[in-house]
Length: 424
View: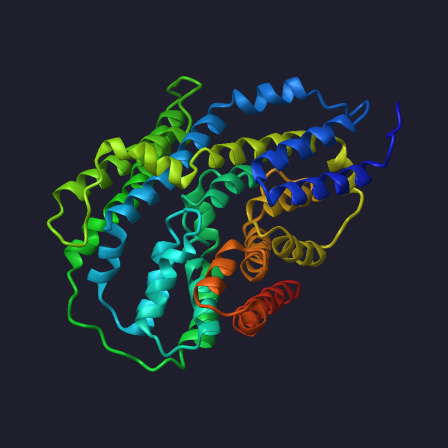
């Protein structure tokens, strides 16, 4: 048996350093380069064949359709934004300022787009101009991520669902409902409760709200129906082609969502709506940089495959790190990376390897994911936080207590729940 040129854990730390350095430029490319470095540093009996890894990752129908799906999601977001459907959706909901401060950033948060925080920031500013700018930063960032935490078509949930062994992203979202409730509660009590209430303007039109939100809901609806039908076929031992995977329904559902949003932009009789002709799809795709999303998907699974074959799982399983340490590490990685997918693709394989599991228990998953999420929200390198601070013309030190304290309260709540669980 050969020995490592350098210890495998040192190779892993160098790999993480490579990914973190390159992630500032491009996360997907950074993960590919980090995974290749880790593979090169492996030796027998854990020698990683990059050719085999490439075949496993790039020819997997689940990975292919998932990558195609996440390419369309930002396109849908771009159409919803440029057509004005999202803005009309919010205006026609017409609720009090307290609800608006929570809902407006939350709904815009469902649109995965570069600089998306700059879309909801003007709304927060307009809803209540009397709120101090540092607090507006916190409101925009905190509530922008409330629905992202549980939205099943969010990129992080789609990827991590595959990693932790859950059958579909809707189960993952369901597991995160308690952290979602905790997050909403903390945000309301700390950021919204003391804000003077301003009543709505009596401009509510629920049917327009339902129409405009339909393209967002159509894709998951088709995906759920498709998964149920596929499950019934498998239950009845009906053979289906290997390329018919659950992710295919999400892909086609998103195509229909895009077509529906284009149709609504044409038929809507409103001054707030602009028609988006099909020939603008290319320009919107370019603006949304849709090509970056599938690269990240393939990079995540490429890294995971290399990690699994590298001998690191066997090394890590011997460490017996307690869950409390993994929770703290999750929070720190969320801060250090400004991402959710990257820490999740590292922590969950470590957890599963150490405890010899093929599926992460729901309770532990919710704790780990929420810890990552809280670190991701408060880090200064989080783009949404940086954009919000710039828009409201304030600084991170001034905004610090408004965004960090809710995150630390959330982290404390997480450890309290974990501590209570140890008593049973």
